[in-house]
Length: 387
Image (spheres, rainbow, N blue to C red):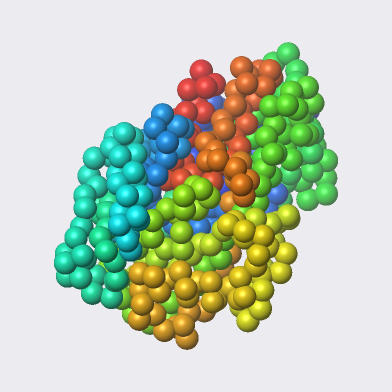
């Protein structure tokens, strides 16, 4: 049996960021992922937005790591020539009641150290975005977009340049504690292998809870329940009517940020995601002419008549001239949420030995949005926990 310093389980953007960071201080870092390539799940099925850090409760890990991660990510992208754009975002209100929601959002932003947001009047909105209908809005100028695939490529290249390596089509089946760390049993393309490590980083995203249950000696009460929340995206055919990202007021339950309009780096517009809790991982886009089979609405137990109808109704609140014929199914993503459909907002959960009782193990649970934005800050946080 060979030994390495660190094994990182999961080659999404967070796992790759952790591997890149730890490869700076350890000689041997191994990244394993059950898929054929890095970033095949949550990291490649999202809005690719660099969030400002305005939605999250003060002192939460999401708030702290999002704000820190945003600054780190912009700097990293500039240094490594990763395609990105500090495009800005408008969060729009349609009534006085929604203005009050935006006021609360603004107060959260200031409490989190995000002090560049400002109010935009209906008159200014009409000048900035003629196709937009809104009572008023908040402008978040530090919100941006990034090419997530290029970011992950760069993180992997950095890790590999420091001696780390990625082994795909490999999943962890068991781990047990030793005097010097843990022994990990893996299945790599049908072949079983055992490897000792000083540190084991469970950054498996949608599979992090299953990985945790396979670790011998781990306090099972420290393992949370994971909820799978699927979100669909529709592509908009034709020239985008917007020059910035357009978001509705956030969901009061904190389950999602509403069906918003985002732009990619080619200035193509897409809308999403919605929020539908599901029982098992399934990326299939449902039949848009009928109910979304097997999905439970985040807001009630009733299914919308059709998925496309749901999107059209939500989008027309701020884009009334939308032509439904210009919407076509794009893709779906799944968020690993700790928050159930009727639960309060849940923070990131990053556990060390004080939380679960095993030296050398770091578990990351519920790393959903703003995980992409926070990835470099999460990596630094994990490194500090090891120290």
